[in-house]
Length: 125
Image 1 (cartoon, rainbow, N blue to C red):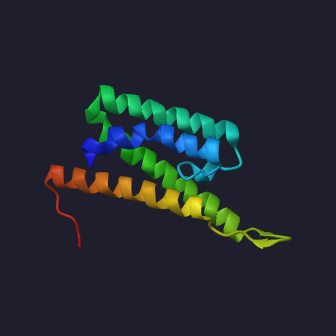
Image 2 (image 1 turned 30 degrees about the horizontal axis):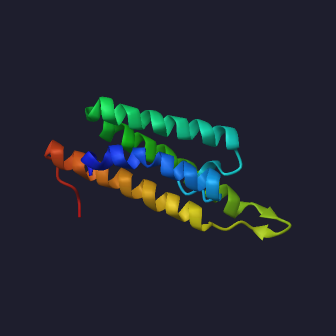
């Protein structure tokens, strides 16, 4: 999985095209209503892409950290949306948020398992 990280972060351009071109935000769904911060986060992701190309040893550390931030932000924003009661009722998790959970969760967990294996640790099963 680690060797695929440059492709994953390089796909940020595709995620940006889907987001800005087709209004399908599946990479930074937690920043849906904040266009400036969404653009900043995309810039950070492109920066991580450059780092994975230039300093590949940093790639797994950045990927786990970025996935942790994305998942934490998704959990918080989704919880707030679901717990808030408005005139329309409670908010629901949409498809883009679910895809964002799956993508970020998979990458973070896969990198974590590879780092555990590389360190010679055993995991509880």
